[in-house]
Amino acid sequence: MFDEIQFNTINRLPNYVFAEINEIKMKARRRGEDIIDFSMGNPDGNTPPHIVQKLIETAKKPKNNRYSVSKGIYKLRLAICDWYKRKYGIDLDPETEAVATMGSKEGYVHLAQAITNPGDVAIVPEPAYPIHTHAFIIAGGNVVKMNFNFNDKYELDYESFFDNLNQAIKDSMPKPKFVVVNFPHNPTTVTVKKDFYERLVALAKKERFYILSDIAYADLTYDGYKTPSIFEVEGAKDVAVESFTLSKSYNMAGWRVGFIVGNPKLIGALQKIKSWFDYGMFTPIQVAATVALNGPDDCVKEITEIYRKRRDVLLKSFDNAGWKIDKPNATMFIWAKIPEEFRYLGSMEFSKELLQEAKVAVSPGIGFGEHGDEYVRIALIENHNRIRQAARNIKHYFKTKRTK
Ligand SMILES: Cc1ncc(COP(=O)(O)O)c(C=O)c1O
Image (cartoon, rainbow, N blue to C red; front, side, top):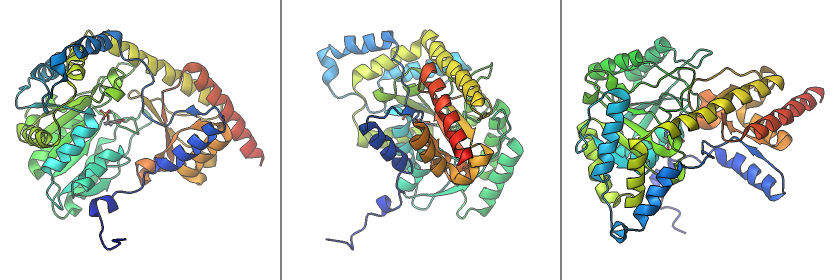
């Protein structure tokens, strides 16, 4: 019935590429199979106890049952600004330059809603975290994708990035209004240094576009690498906003709390649209998030150390299994190039075989865009024993596949 009535926004959203893998995974589990699951960036650790304690304490106070503040309670916005000051030496105004969001995903989607006119163009480097693209599609905009390269330490190749970006700007009609960046990057783990943002901010001012920078993995860095903020660049606030989340640094993914800061015009737009969409996160979550951000930061260091150790165990045991993978220095992921002899399968088929034959679930790179098809993403959300078990299963799968 009503076939002639179409929902254009929904029609523009593709089917979820990971759904196919999830379906096979669920069926295997229902058959009682033990699947070692590296597929989602969904932290498996506990939220630090002092944060949970604060939530409980605050939830017991009846006044906190009331509607909260959609842009975030003042204390939380202050804690966000203090976090930036401590970490990066950057000054932000909690009234005009910070918004607390229900995770950075919600913030990002609503920001796109607030600032996109129909047909506006956003440039998104690909492979990409799917929301970076589809937030603009939902908002009625268009996305121009561009590829980027990196070396065997997963460091961005600036020259090819800026060549591709300049070309994308030149080819785009109308001119792009937004450029999205996300370093350390999901899914590739690629990192940049401050000089990258110096060049990007200068280009944004010349070509007149806004920069949306996502630093969800800012804290999850290893071997001396430190994530820069775009606001370390003089004048970046004129053209940029930056988002962060408590999901990863504090194992708080289910709590749904993050924030976006920076350019007052964009932040004002997000504050305004949020005031129409929601009444704010449950106040106790905001108070607990304030406690998390105010520190101490030992828990963040402990969480980071867990991922670092898992990274090392995984690289070593997979190497023993015959799968040599380069070492990333950030995020909770490994962006693993499919062994050459199996690359012909493509990432979707390879992931399906890993799941069916080795009982190991990963995310196929194609799910992050066509440039990801030679890779799979492995999330470091299983313990050392299970990582080693996965390596043994994979070794066996490789061996039987070779002899077929
Ligand atoms: C790059 C990036 N940004 C944002 C998010 C969303 O995180 P949340 O909505 O939990 O803050 C994720 C989640 O995996 C991510 O990988």
